[in-house]
Image (cartoon, rainbow, N blue to C red; front, side):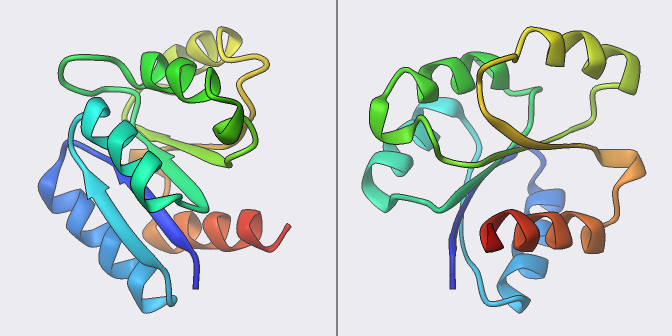
Length: 125
């Protein structure tokens, strides 16, 4: 069983993702805002983070930069799961070089099964 931190502002989507991951045996800690996710990461020591780029207060990119500034979290796998369009995502990803992002998924084009398979594949590495 892995611990997954889900940083997602949409309550219904977070519930669906959490349930899908829990059915696969993972413990899920859902957070809505980046500071709470940072605190949770420090307390819970997740094995993987699923991150939306569109968050209230701070962007997911800012959260990722902060996360990577801590040596203990530099190798923590992060999956970006966002509603940002593929064109915008490509532009955003260019700025994420060196931030150790394990996978990118566009929400409208990614099923829960595909997301959970991605999680399992990354955790198996």
